[in-house]
Image 1: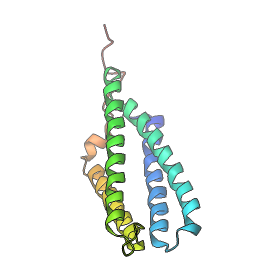
Image 2 (image 1 turned 180 degrees about the horizontal axis):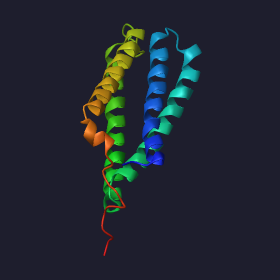
Image 3 (image 1 turned 45 degrees about the vertical axis):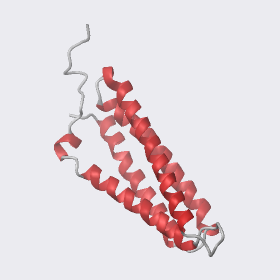
Length: 150
C-alpha cells in the first residue's frame, strides 16, 4: 500500500495536466500571438518542468533499485524521441501551409499544428487511462517486502 508521500507525489501530475490543458486551450482559442503567448507559455513551461520532475520521482519510486538506471534511461529516450517527432511534425505542417508563394506559414498552419499536437496529447491521456486500475493503484516495488541483496 502506498504511503502518504507517494500518494501526494502521484497526485501532482493530475494537477499539472490540468494546468497544461488549460494553458494550451487558452492559447489555441486566441487569434493573436502577442497578447496571450508570454503568460500562456510561462504557465505551460512551468507546468511541463514540474511534470517532468515528478515523472522522474515516480519512476524511481516504482521500480526496484537494481533497475532504476534502465527505467530512467527509457524515460529519457522516450522524451527525446517525443520531442524530435513533435518538432518534425509541426515543421512539416507549417512548411506545407504557407502564405502564397512565401515561406511564411499561414495562420491556418499554426491552427493545424496545434490541433495535431492536441490530438497527440489526448491520445497519450487515453493510453495512460487505459492502464488497468489494479496496475495504477499498486506500487510496482515494495522495499519492505523484498529480500535484502546479497
